[in-house]
Image 1: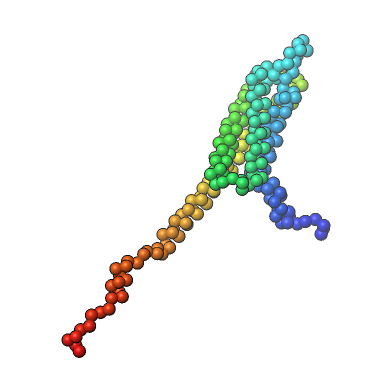
Image 2 (image 1 turned 135 degrees about the vertical axis):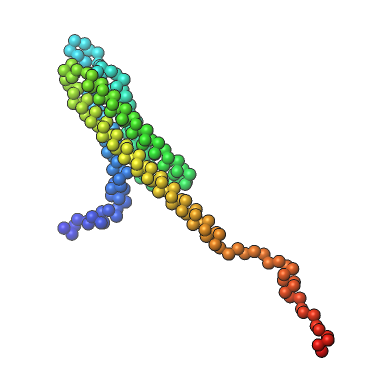
Length: 214
């Protein structure tokens, strides 16, 4: 047992600490589910009937539904990879203004993909319920996998939206508190006002001699 490192020592490692962050876990799940939407539609989403060689979308033969699911899945994959790379670098190579822009873009992107996945889940479910599964029996598993993964993608991107908002609010509060502390320090610091020359001259001037008292 001495050869195995303890859990506290493992958590202190930078890679393990990064992988255990809620934001990282949510991004990995979002990347996985978006892949599980686009991959089944690409592999088994287009099939043909025995009497024709034309490939049709298994979702009610609506090619727009398949293209929408594939497109959202691919773009979601790219966004997950992009923000994972930014999280790895911990935004240390960017200025404060650039970090704020990235945080805001993370919020906008997460909220946008939450809405896009909700639309994708609704479209895929509606088109599959309107189609006849026995026409394309080989595409039943692909349709079920894409619909399930699109629903789970909604939860992942909603969690990413909440985490992005919390990160932006925490950094804004830290910046505001630091600025307030700096302002308080400046106001409480004694000011070095210049001393008037006339005051120095009046203090150094000798008092007149009263001859009547001699």
